[in-house]
Image (cartoon, rainbow, N blue to C red; front, side):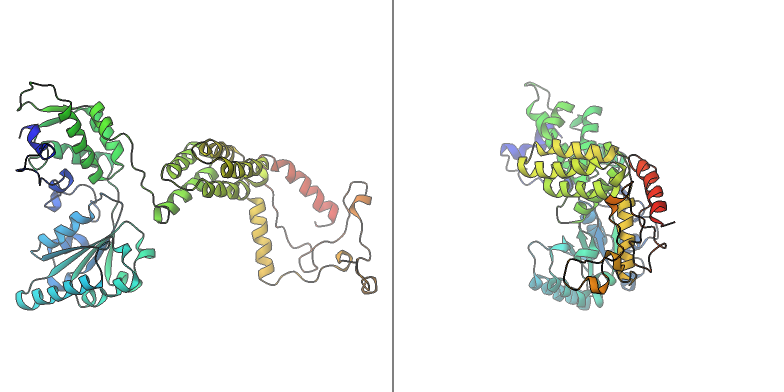
Length: 456
């Protein structure tokens, strides 16, 4: 097919103005055409059996497909319906309501009773359904009146009601790897449903489209289609119609200049990226920490949220290994609040680098946790009498403050006396300094202090 025919819709040709997007035209029609998801589609797997109709009606379990965009959730739903000649109904949780669900249930009952034919209900973005709307699905799923195939990009544990989860298979899809995305592009370039060999793709352009897709097959195909459009616009006058057009890196970069950051500030990605960010600082991988910082910022995360995470990490993970890390983090938090983006990224980066490179110690964090645990379990008796407040009338008659030694009166500034309650004295060791960074010096002093205090 001449290249121009593939984009005639944009030039007003009414004969091709309804040409579907490339991602729709290239949707796999068989299991063999599916790229990625080899594990969940292996022979004998629950999803494969559902698609192939193995086990008949008795084996037709509903399924929740959970995974990032562009991993094949809609494709697999279509395969569940078509491979076993089932009736297929598609709803979107964005626009559908309980009334629509009940209409589908009535249709499914009619198909089953009159034609002995199963109905597949594909519900996209099920996480957008309220609890009441999800409840409306239960009777049909319970009796297998319908085979529900629901798709979601959100963690089902948080977004789908437990009764529906318990009646369905939970199938986790993963992003495609680079080689699989490359295969998707190669097939689309030569397949008659796609660009039908009217274009060629340079290695540099292919690499750019693979990278920009980030494991999303739909995004890869959409980017390829946009790149082909740029190449067509850039084609020299007088070029032979049957001559394939070359899609170059320049065409691909012009069509898709920036990767879409996969991130939801209130969903699973928010917690996953934030977790990876904190763990990378803790693990001293400054490059990884900066990467996750960039992902949060590019996705529009509130820089003040990020700054607060850095402050916590500076105390929890760096602690007395480098006490100045907390100073840097607190200063960054205040500076970010005053300055804002985009310059705030520089301030945050400085604090991240300091945190990541600093010697690590969680001794203070572990110490307060151990102390809190003792308090909650009832340990810790009365405050020793010599430490009790004596600045009120009658305190001296109670013996409060009697025998207290003022530390500054001692030659070395340390008074040898009991500070812990009786049941903890000599039995606790909350703070255990490491031998890393600044804390190595504290370790030696704390050992001496415990001896001086009579704690050993």
